[in-house]
Figure 1: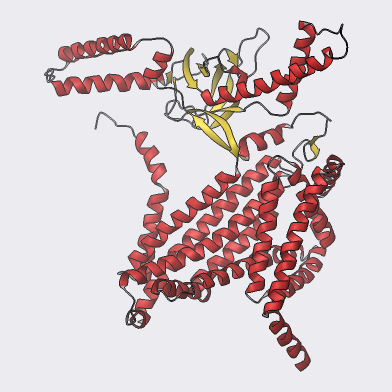
Figure 2: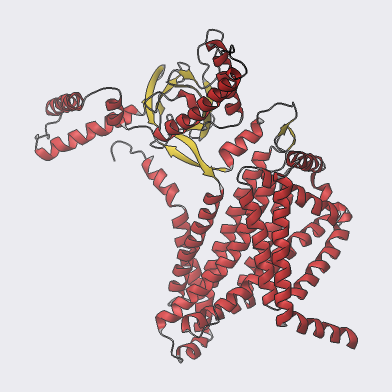
Length: 632
């Protein structure tokens, strides 16, 4: 036993030595660079497509096993990770997530080394795997083994980043000293430790709850929803209780007397508390976002429904399957929305002059004034009353514009200059490729001449290839229809025409078949980008079928033309930044309340404020839909 203790002490001295730190850092950096460039050479070198195809096939075989492959030992997991990195690297923009993953692991490893914990963490990881794999090999303990396998790296990452944050707060400034004490409290206090453990358990458990038989797009959506949503809920409660406790308990136990007897200003004390809580949130949010992001990348490169491997359809076709197309163009993308023109701008776009609009408005106002003078004895015709009448007429016309009576059609105009520019750019590429092929064919001999029919065939072939490769911008109409009391069981029949092109099915005579839609439910329909006219506009006709019982009402954001503006990566990290800012407001409120309230009361008030803030959107929508009875 004494020999073991002495060996542990020697290893501890070794891992804290400068020579070991520099040598281990060099090894980590070299291994990271070697891994990245090996992947790059495998993918982009000779035979790279075959390497990627084999990796994708192996991923498909693994996916067919469900989660069983995870229980076969470390070698299948290492092979799966290697294949996933190969497939990810080969995709468009795949170099960034691989570089971030390798760089993140290398950065954490270097931080562990310079904290003097390199050999300690290596031993803990080895021990955790030696415990987890045998547990996962048995049916009775498989779930426990998977939890150990997932939670140990998360917990280690958390403690490493906490040590790094303590180093960042190691200065002599009063604010940093108070913040450092908050970090120490967070690890000691049961109220915060419980939420930290819950958060790590959620990140470890949720991936195992996903149903492998579901379409891939649903699994990715569920993971993003639960991974981000549940993490925010846990972090919000952790922030609220920790921020309240760290001030209220110090006042209750009179610890604050010792702090304030030192040269610490009140604002420095309060700011230090806030900085400490937000530092803890930054650590937890970094661990959470990294785990969610990496697992999302892993999921997105699994075979989708209808694929035998990544981007390899079962039917052998060249296009994407429906599941893959929706995942790529609707789920894992950053989209920009364009609302239709308002009533006045739409009339201008239809060729109505400003003078005609003004005359129509004045005529409607005069008719309304005459009706009021006839029917309302209290109407005096003052300037204020006339201005109110004019405003009421404008609002009614705008509301009527977004109302579609039964068996009628209403046209809404979308201006999409950005999509028009993108289409023109793709068309220039197509024209250049067609001209190149024509020149190559005509260069085969002096008598070779490509006629117009052959040129059209080349153009058709090249255009179809660009369509299959998703080179044209993708448009998606997001709509929400309301009617009457928005009965959730009611199904309404609606059809859409984009510049005269039906966006749904047609009958034998070519007439559009109405869609069956639920009220007050956001839905989408694909819009071909070639529907855009030469002016960069889409005239969307919304038809209310004659079988419906009520007029359709479209809310202000009920029609929105969405198009892809990039990948989801930037949006993902923006969401994490917004969550961190929201947690900052929660922490500030809880700290401010706990300066003059007890822990229980400050938590209760802070919870009420949090509930009101989170329900603000619901209240705003409810107030807009509030109806008056008998004008009271």
